[in-house]
Structures are given as C-alpha cells and as structure tokens.
Amino acid sequence: MEKTVEYIKDKTKDFIPEIGIVLGSGLGELADEYCEIKIAYKDIPNFPVSTVKGHEGNLVFATINEKKVIMMQGRFHFYEGHSMETVTYPIKVMKKLGVKNIILTNAAGGVNPYFKPSSLMIIKDHINFMGTNPLIGPNDDSLGERFPDMSEVYTKKLRKIAYTCAERLDIPVERGVYIALTGPTYETPAEVNMVRLLGADAVGMSTVPEAIVARWMGINVLGISCICNSAAGISTVGLSHKEVLEAAEKAKVDFKRLVLEIVKNI
Image (cartoon, rainbow, N blue to C red; front, side, top):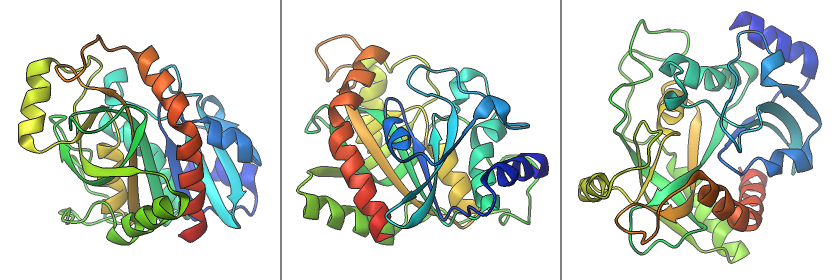
C-alpha cells in the first residue's frame, strides 16, 4: 500500500482528491473528458489490472466544478478471480490519498419490472449475496473498526443531493435496492425471482464490496446503477455484455450530466 500511494503521489504531486468515482461498464468516457493526469493500472506498483471489456484500466485525476476528483476507469471484479482484498484495494488507496466522498457506479440488470433499460437508479441499500465479505480476515484498526455499522451504507445526505440534482436537471431517476451476486453468468429466471422476493430492484456483480469497505473506513458513499437490461425472466430476449454496453451508451448523456451536478453540490 505504501509503495502504491507513494508512486501515485509522485505522479500527481500536490493533487489531493476529495471525491472518488468508480466508473462501471461503458461509463468511462467521463474520465476522458476531464482528464488532467492519467496513470495506467499496469504501471502502478501492486495495483491489479482490469480484464473486462468496457473497463479501460486507468486512474484519472481531474478538477471538476472546482473539486479535486480521482476516477477509476474500470474496476476489479470477484468473478475475474481476484480476492476480495484485491477488489477493494483501490478504495483503500483512495482513502490514503484523501478521498472523503465516493460515487460508485455500475451497470445492472433491472429486477423491478417497472424499471426501463438505460434508466438510472440511486442505490438506497444493498444485499450482499456474494457468499463472502471483504472485511473477513485480520482487521486494520488504522482504517476502521472490527465490527462496522452498516445501517446506512449509502449516505442519506449524498442521496438527497443526487435526488435534488436529478430533479433540477429533469433527469428521471429510480431509487431501489441493489443485490450483488458473484457472476460471471447472468442470473437464471429462478434466481431473478428469488432476489425479487428478497427485495432487490436491481442485480449486478460489483459495487457491494467497495461500498462495504468505503463505509468501514468512514467514506461517504453514493451508489448509482445504470439499468442496462431487464433481468432474465423479465426480459423476453437473451442477455449479453454487448447489450449492457449499448444500454450504457444510451444512458451516458444523462449519467454524465447527473454525476457532474452531484460533484458540484457535494
């Protein structure tokens, strides 16, 4: 961790980010538009490398609406074979760099039948259905306590800001519960029916481990899902990653406008 942080600080000099943004599948364009400093994951000591299409694999530093921001163009997934420690490593790095607020974005399947593809959902809570927890193992007391409270993972103040910004921009947003499964397979119709009964509105393969670790370290968390398709059993057609990227492409204009406005108001 020290080598990672030291390398990044050497490249970014006196740039101290206050807001972190993790850009999900197909949403990395925002980072390109505002890039001041770009560091490839592969060049950072001890940093993992993203292998999924739509995840470019760069740390991007930018000043957006007078706020210092660090953006991840692509994340690391449990289904890639990474450990939970590796999946959440960048979030710990962000904390060490100075991040106090983080926006976690993802591409998700709509479980709620009223959600339309390419719509945006503000995550109000989550269900960890990945069969493990990123905090299992020895606890680093310098980052957070052993048994962290998870009664408010997604910070109410940030959610209120997001709703207000969406209303101001006339961008319709849903609000709901996100459930994370391991992937990489899309869910079966029976599994979608199960998670709907559990109270989920959207399903995906990321975000939850990062949110848990961020909350553990005292970072304020906002989660935004791009509903890229209707999940199996709700959709009448087969599911594909190509479809996810295409839906993210359609949603990216509203997504970028909303994120920029949220950053402005944090």
